[in-house]
Image (cartoon, rainbow, N blue to C red; front, side, top):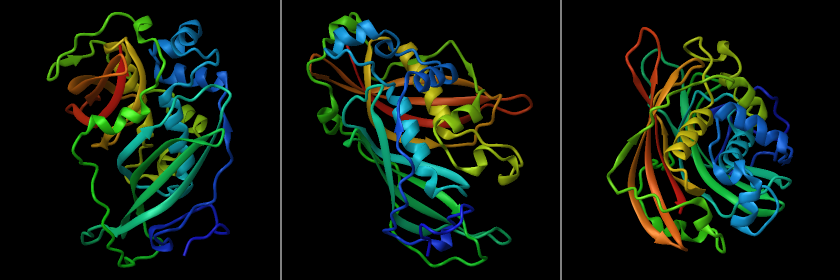
Length: 329
């Protein structure tokens, strides 16, 4: 079974066991440089992160806010101690940011294996399995983020170990009430502008499509160790895969453009990577408001975001089905 003394070429699916806790990678103190680099790659349009004076008035705290997408990306990157050999990330679930994070706070991420399940094997195909990870991130020792993600890993050998845990899926009933605990209190949301009268069921297509570039820069910024995001020889197609969090970050920037009164991100109800993304893809974003309720002087909202990739010589392909939960004026 995998242990802390194993070499850096793993772990492989047939070398791990349920309940294993991976060695915690180095903590990371968020800096203004991290924030600027993230913004340059992902195109942040989040007013409280862009305008520190606004953030101070909004929150009553002079410390700059860290973009919640950056916090999530750093946590996912740290969790790749478990997925250096990942074939694909299948889904994320139950992601909740329990409080805003500030520039200058130190993030520490712990990762454990919660379930293992052999993947169906086709004749001639390599042996692979699904690994469900539980991930918890603290900021200056306060738990600020918790979630699960499911990854597909190869076996080192040619046989499956026979794991059959219940992995489940990302699908679950949406319950906005469970995010109420994460809604910031004492924020003056009126400073973000007049209420955005977005009706449930209304779709907004972002007229500004965006190209995927700087992929390896984001991988390095977030300390993502998955080989498929750095080395094209590590992929089945021979093309380097874009880190899924990059696609999510571009989608979040589009949502921020489409809902400029957004106060902050509270969590992800669902996140499914439905097809691979490659550097140079042109992404198109559509946002559908699927639920909302009044909360603490603002609006608690769930938005289903669909991202479609356009590439020369191929039909458009849906690459992301993502449902963030946010609070807005």
